[in-house]
Image 1 (tube, helix red, strand yellow):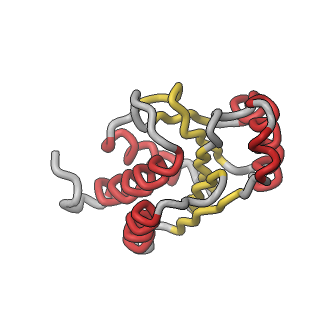
Image 2: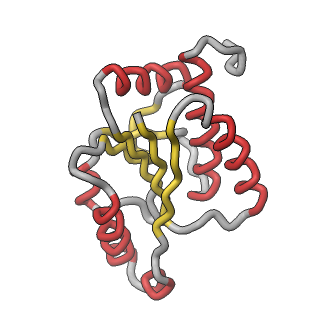
Length: 157
């Protein structure tokens, strides 16, 4: 199964990039994982919230495929603990999901079309984090989930 993290705009904070790189290197031992960045023109950021979400959605639509299993990382999504997330990934493997795509939206979340297109909505926390921080938290949790499924000692229960 190929896993992709689709994110709006690049990660600009060096300390976050460093952390993300650490987990990207670790994940190579477990799965095919890519981060795809969709760059939104700066002129879009001057528009009203609804228009920004619409423009981001159009760019995301060009990236995802009909057969992708799409998971929105969204504050209103289902809360899973790390073990449950590991089981979620294992289920997708057993269901022969070929492409599992996790999407982090822009600053205002997602357009309604994406909410309807999504196969699943996942929340990483009830707290609100910056979109850039969520990237690091997500790749760490993905790594943790794979170590849990392999019975490795990274995750302490």
